Amino acid sequence: MKVWVAHQMKQYFCMIFFLLGACHSQEIKVKALRDVHGYNSTDAAYSISDTGEVDLSTVDFMIPKGSVCFLGNEKYGKTDRFVEIRCENGLIGLIIEDEAFMPLDE
Image (cartoon, rainbow, N blue to C red; front, top):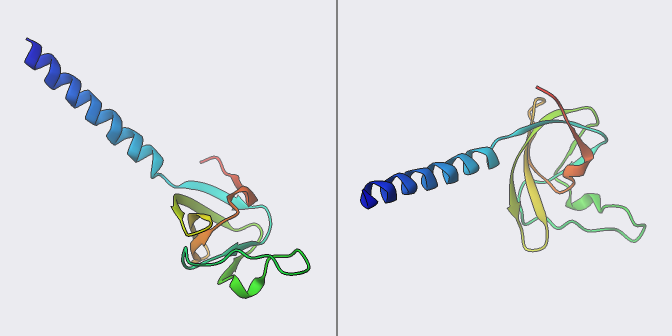
């Protein structure tokens, strides 16, 4: 009986971790609240110019305000946290400013 209970507990334990992983890797549908800087790799340097603005020479592409996109998994570079993004207008890459997006109800 103890072996059967231990086996069942192991199955439940594995199922819980599988479900948590599946939930974590789901994409979230969002809309850009403003123009957002996009990057092609986690090696990108998020730097601020002397004027206090983002140094656009480090930006690989721009996601226009109002774009509908899907946020995915987090990735970490040497200095920044990035979030995978895939937009309906074809843009794919990484962003730093995920707070610049509003979740959309499905």
